[in-house]
Length: 481
Image (cartoon, rainbow, N blue to C red; front, side, top):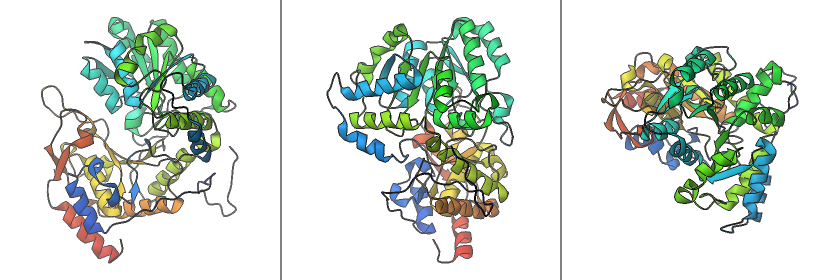
């Protein structure tokens, strides 16, 4: 990736692409925004797209495709079995990961389900640097439990540690020594989603794999956020600076037994799958694909998406492509920092993360500050983010609330989707909200599912704070949207 400096001295990300297709956006008035979030039960997942200006909920399945991906979709072979599309995809995975076997699935959580059903049983313990919501749900549904072994730096929201997603190797060694008979595999998440998209170093991944293999355990990698993690390894880890992205990827994959991913993130397409080195592991999981997903050569995916995924995986090995997300995220993070808005540092992958605990210190954790902040940011600017805090957890077996380690609002920046002016708008509205943060109050559940409640639970404000926020907006912005 070439270094590009501005004569003015400005440090702004430069788009290494041009826009050829556009989609019209609407910014509805603040009164409608307040009404819309109320209709959605103060859950941003339940907002209608027609009411959203900047959709920063996720980067899953909403990244912009390249011209090469769109072109590739036209040559798809839709044969039910023996598809040439499947062969092209498996060949690309072999080229990148050096894996001999591939099981397709319709998305990442489907791959998680297959892995969990194969290896997890009652009493199983799955060590990982940090959990993801659906990963944990699949494991606990089968009677297993998750043991999070991220370093202490991982949950320090303000830090200069470049690899806050690293494992605590001592704790991993100790757990494997104490509970070896209950541990089927160790899971590595490249890019810890729930604590700010923080990366894992190449050296730490290799050390984790060596420890696990010494204890006779499999190593499973969630590669959904691998592209951002590759960028951070290349730019932050001295030992990898002279390695290409392909060389870094091969170093990682050589240590893994199973690699699964959501192509809605990795590969810029809609699908997923499991790449495997060993035939016996492949055979253990194979029968679950036609049972739950589809035949072995499509796994519930559209073959057109599979063609796009093949090209997208190839583009993931291009530094000019993978740099776009982290550079825009860093820009947004730095701009908010310059305005004293509390954010997670250093900037990670996936999106810019607001620290709701410091943003709304007056809102008790039992009143879901990250969820309240998500609703308030939407009211302030029509910007939809995702709560990554206590709402994203689930209650303990006795019904008590499981308070999250961190309370974050994730503002995802899908790749090659937003312009710099749109990012600047988001920063402006968030700064306005921060200056009026005392107006924002908490939330309480009125409809609470027992599992994955952040997807479809409904809440209400504990006071009339949304109305007061609307009134303050009108006072400052007049007739402006």
